[in-house]
Length: 161
Image 1: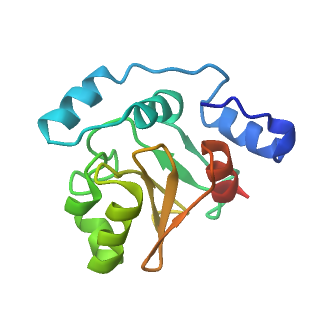
Image 2: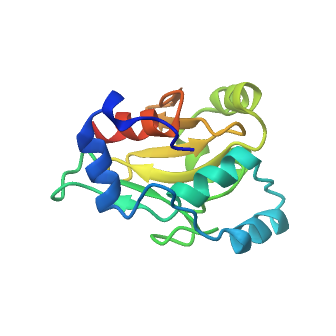
């Protein structure tokens, strides 16, 4: 997943991700998450699984800055609220539907695949982070769903810059 060189991006990103618990070659066990998702009819693709193995469970910010806070879940429910479910197909996700009109949900499912899932939050709960079937990070902000970058590192760079 990382296969990218950090010298191409801001070195500060590397430090922020390390502070959040990331390290090169990180691979957490997500077998329970995969089972829970399958029970709920959420089918994670291989790119999604690889992303979660590497980045799932990370939570970071720099000295309490609201602008660069993020949380990437590695559990079926959020640690913040039982009603705030993660790893749910976005067509069924109430919090995403509340922020994004149905046309945007339909567009996201059409453009990024029906197994696009909500995986986290950033900027102190103001934005949702989605993960497409092919592993592309997406940002739900102000009624729009936007790609964060072509790779996970580009996505984190945009969240944390």
